[in-house]
Length: 263
Image 1 (cartoon, helix red, strand yellow):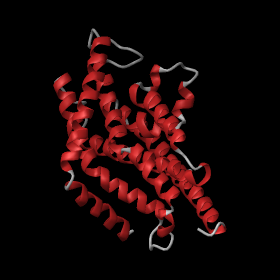
Image 2 (cartoon, rainbow, N blue to C red; image 1 turned 120 degrees about the horizontal axis):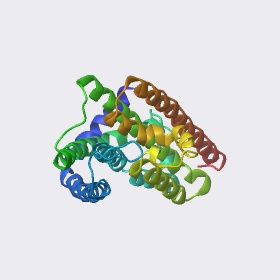
Image 3 (cartoon, rainbow, N blue to C red; image 1 turned 135 degrees about the vertical axis):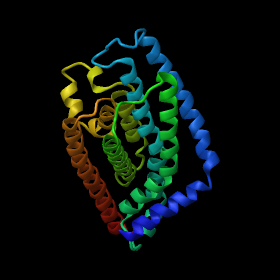
C-alpha cells in the first residue's frame, strides 16, 4: 500500500508543475458550464417550477456536480494511455515491477487528477453561487459523505476506463468502446437525472454504473438523506468490486496471451 501512496503523492507534486495547463482546462469547463446553466435557466422560466421533481436550483447543482465528476477524471487520456501501453508493448516492462499494474494506474491517475479536481470543485462552487446566490442546505457531516461518494464515483469511473484501455489486449483498438462508454455516461448520467427518462428505463438506470458514478453523488448534494446515502454507498461498493474485478480479468487474460506469444 505504501508504494501506491508514494505514486499518488508523486503525481500530485508533478501536476503542480503544470498548473497553467490545468487552468486552461479550467477555462474550457467554465464555458461549458456557463452554456449548460444558461440553458437550464431558460427552461426554468419560474425558479420554483418543478420538472420531474427538480426545481431550478436542484437542476443547476446537479449539472455542476456531474460535470465536475466527469470532466475532472480525464478518462479519454487515461484510456488512450493504457491502450498505447498495451499496443506498444510498454506494459510488458511492468510485469516484473514490485507493484500491480492496475494498482499503479489507479493510484497514478488519482494523483494526476487531484489538483484538477480541487480546482474544478472550487469552480463549481463559484459558478453555482454566481447563478443561484445560495448553496445546498448541508451540514458538515453531509458534505463529508457527499465528498466520499464523489471520490468513490471517480474511482469507479477510472477503473472502468482502465478496463476499456486493457481491452486493446483483445481487440487491438479499444477507442470505439470508449467512445460508446463516454457517450452513454454523458447523455444518461451527466446532462439529465434519471428521473428525466421514461419510467420503463429508470429501473435499469438505477441498477447501472451510471447510478454509482454520476447520479448518486449529485442526488446526495441536492437531496441528502441517510436512506439515499446508504443506497448509493452500497451501489458504489458493489460497482467498485465489479470494476476492479473486470480490470483484473482483462489484465490477466492479456498477460497470459503475452506469455503464450513470447511477449
